[in-house]
Each structure stands twice: as C-alpha cells, then as structure tokens.
Image 1 (spheres, rainbow, N blue to C red):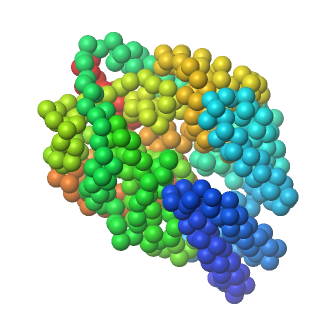
Image 2 (cartoon, rainbow, N blue to C red; image 1 turned 180 degrees about the vertical axis):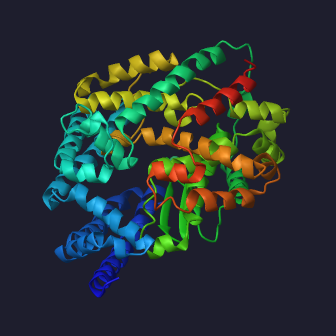
Image 3 (cartoon, rainbow, N blue to C red; image 1 turned 90 degrees about the vertical axis):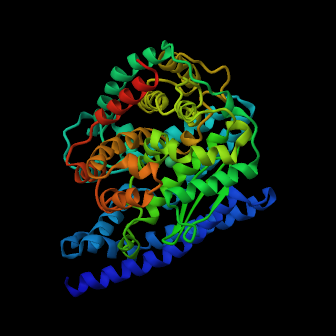
Length: 520
Ligand SMILES: [Zn+2]
C-alpha cells in the first residue's frame, strides 16, 4: 500500500471510530426508549438521540472525510480484504446520498417522523384517512430520493444486470432501487418470478390444507399464564439456543426487536401476552437468532467497521432459521416439551407432545402478519409487495390502499379485515418508506437452501433433540455468518450452498412438512 493510501485509510478509520461512539450512545438511548424510559422522559431523550445521530452524519459529511474515503475507494485494490469491503460500503452510501443536501435530508426525516406519529394516531383510531396525507408524502419523498441519484452511479453499484427495471425510464425503476437498498443486487424481475412461483405452488396447497379432515387442537395455547412463568421460559430458551448472557441482556417492549450496541453487547426483547404463551417463546427464539448472528461474527468485522454489511434478508434468514426451521421442528418440541409442561402445568395438563407440536404448527389464514403461521406468512408478504409496487408506480392512489388491501386478503387468504387497524394500519414499515417487506420472505428462502447443505454435514435432528446447539451454532458461524458482511446476498448464498438463489428448497420444505401434518 502506498503511504498516501495508508494515510487516508488511517484518517477514515479514526473518523469512523469517533462516529461509532456517538452511534453506540444513540443506540443505547433508543433501546432505553423502547423498553423502560418513562413517558414524560421521551421527548427530552428524543432530542439527545437526534443530536447524537446528527454528529455521526456531520462527521461523515465533512469534505476531508469524503476526500479520504474517495481516495481509498479509488485505491481499493491496494487494501487488504476487510478494508476494501469497508471502502466499498462507504462508497455505496456516498453514491446514494451525494446529491442529497443536509436540508433535504432533514426534510426527509421530518416527513418520516411525522408519518410515524400520524400512523400511531391513525392506528389507535383505526382510521386510515388520518394517515393518508403523511403516507402520500413518504411515497413522494421516496420517489424524489431515488430520482436524486445519478443513474450511472446506480448502474455501477448494481452491476450490469440486464433487467428492464434498471432502466430509469421503466415504470418500476424507483421500486427496484428501493428494494435494492434493502437487499443489494436483487431486481424486481427476480422478485416477481420468485413470488409468482410461490403462488403457483402455495395457493393449491393452502386449499388442500383448508379442506383437510385433520383437526388440530389449540385450546390450551390460550390458557392464562403469568408473566413470571413466561420469564422462566424465556430464561430457559435463551440458554438452550446458546445466547450468551455475559454479552447481552433482554427486556420487554411492545414489539420485540434486537439491538446491537457493540461487539460485546447485543440485546433482545420480548413481549408477554397473558393468554398466548407461545408468542413470547417464539419471539425470543427469533430475536435470539438475530443476536447469535451478531455475537458469532468474526472479530475483524468490528476492527474494520464492516459489521453493518449484512442485508436484512440475510438477518431474517438466521432469525427464521432458529424460530421456524429449528424451533418448530419435531426434534425441538421433543427437547422443550418436558420443560414447557413443568413451567406451564395448568395450560399443558393432558397435552401430549404430538398435540403440542401440531398446535405450534397449525395453519390458520389470518389478518395479522406478525401473528401468522409459518405457512401463510409468505402470502402476507406477497400482498404487501404487490401493493407497494402499485403505490410507487402510480397504479393506485393512496386513498385506494385499504380497498386494495381487502381485495388481496380475500383473494389469497379468504379473510378480509373489518377495520383499518387489523388491515393496512397494522405495520409501521410504510411510515418510513417502501421496499422492506420482501426481505422477510427472502430470509425463509435463504435458510431453506443452507439448511439443505447443513443436514448433509451434521445430524441436525440429533443435535436439536439433545440440546446440542453448540454444534449448530458452530456450523452457522463457519458457513453462514463468516462472510455475510463481505458479500452481496447472491454471492453469499452461492458461497454457502454452491447454488444460485431459488425459492424451491423453501417450497419443497413447506410442502413436505404440511402434507405430513395435515395428512394430505
Ligand atoms: Zn426479525
């Protein structure tokens, strides 16, 4: 490396280190706000969080930093791999925002903040019209943000894929760019094909499940339990999957989440419902999966500031692997059944292991995405994706969204919301922009692919049944976690499995599992 490159790299790293201190503090405050911050303390704390985040923004927007960053990006061939990845990550962010002024940035964040407040109020009142105006502004801001980008930059960043939606004049160009912000390198064409394929296979299967004679009892799942009992279950489950309490902590929040503070502090949350003990069990396993991904990544990622390189789809693949693929398997139920009976004796009285397994996997078309079963979940995502495309391309007006929502739910799941709260207002995501939802489904498809490789190398059922998560976590660490920050999703899944991305492994898995469960 020439001395000029070294000098610039050192400067970039020093700034990133400083920025990380502000970012770390701001994440702590956010976690606090979501968990125990008193209502009246929120506003003051919100101001401090905004101040800290602004410091991070300012540090990275200073001309000296941008110059040094561009220098190392241009000389990236001289850098060692981790630093080269860092230079590429920094350049990607820079290219996307270089035409966005600080004032514009502030205007966008004000629109999103207002949208969040309006969404909360509209949801409470179950009245979409209270959110419509803000949502329209979010849509327009998203379109403006993408149009401010230089198409040439985007072409360089996205590679030279031959997809019509990558043409700036294409109707789906904006939506395609938004999707790519979350799942780097994926195109609208690829997603369309993937979801069409899912529909072809899942729609007929759902019909068969719904007309199956098999009766699954779920009465006991809604018996009243105490918070204390659920806390004991949480303690048990996090120790089973290997979440390290010396490097993490858990709390409760309205919506469960994972927050990464630093390399030795990865926190998770859950939510206790008095008449749905399985909800907190599976949210803690889900968040625990996210946390393991962060806890078991290479040390070098932190030293070279690249730990944010994982995509949301990669992250969801891991959390859903632990929650569904492992957590809802027969072997996992076998492992936790005795403890579940011990902790919830009233609810589990007279319930067999087989009945517990069936109840955990029951298929019930429903209105709420976060409470849906593993099988129908994909439909919730497809519905949102199809509506998002229509919103961003201008095919439907904002005022038409609730109607479209009802039509799609009726079409795919045979249920239709009576209120906006159980319909279009259930998710917060659109208040901060569009394009996020598909990553949830991509996650299911990635993990189905790497599960199929893992099962050739280790006896997964035996490991799960005996509570030997160390074997599983080690395999994940070596094969799934190790290069996630360094590769694009397509390169990453190919690196793990030797194959190109496909939805088939996931669809095969659903077909086999649910045909068995419903005796089809
Ligand atoms: Zn998640």
